[in-house]
Image (cartoon, rainbow, N blue to C red; front, side):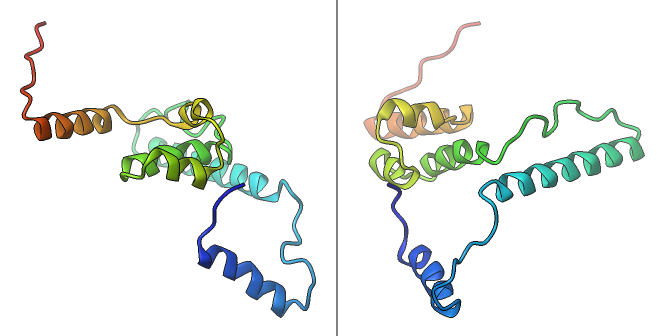
Amino acid sequence: MVSLSREAVRIPESLRKRREGKRVWTMASDSVAQAFGRAAGRARAACEKECLAGEREPDPGFLVDVRFHDLRHEVTSRLFERGRNTLTVSADIGHKTLQRLKRYTHLRAETIVRERDRTESRRGEKRLPISR
C-alpha cells in the first residue's frame, strides 16, 4: 500500500463524480510507459541533433535503456536528499523492507559528503586529512 496525500485522493474522486461513476482512467495499463519511451526517444533525437549542429559528438548512452519505472529509483533518492526520514520514504514509495528501499536508493556522492560533514560539524569533529 502506498500513502497518498489528501489532494492525491481528492482528484480522482472529483473526476469520478464528474464522469457519473464511469472509469476515470480509460487508457491501457502500459500507456504511460509507452508514452515515456516515446518522449525519451524524442529527447534523445533532439540532443543528437543539437550536438551535431554544434559539431560535438553525441553521447551514445544518453537516455538509452531508460524506462518509466526508473523514475521510482529517482524519486526515492531525491526524497532522501530532501531530508525525508526512512520510514516516511518507505511508506510513500511502498517498500515493505529496508533491503528493498536500499535497492531503490541511489544517493549522489556530494549528498553523502554533505550529510557526513553536517553530522560531524554538529558533533564538533574535525575531518582527517586524506593522504594521497
